[in-house]
Length: 169
Image (cartoon, rainbow, N blue to C red; front, side, top):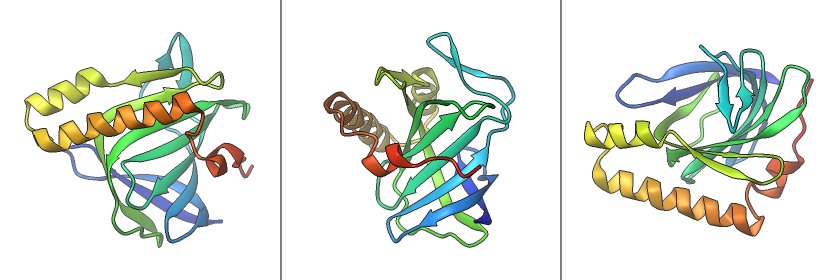
């Protein structure tokens, strides 16, 4: 395992660095483990899904409209999957940092029971109205979110290798 920083950009801000360790790299995906650092706990359906020192295994894909985080609490109990709709990364860098991942605001939480929740729709609507993302890109982001939801409903998302991955503790 070697140190790596995930470079994550949410328009209009400059990319931020999130430190982690590289667990695996292929030509089509990076697998990175990191501890979360948040300003305040994130709740979905009344449950805390993200808090400081929670563990995440991030899967960054080449050419896909999403990344996936497999989240664990401080006792390393699995909580679910966090999926960001992102602009596809055309080239994966995995030296000291990743290629810049651009967030398109829409997120999806998938619980262990396979219930899903669409998140950040208000932030998405605001980003579109403020022209932080072009309308054409926004329509594609919505289309990709619905495509991911259909895959969740069919039981084929997240991919098997994401489901099988365990934290390296």
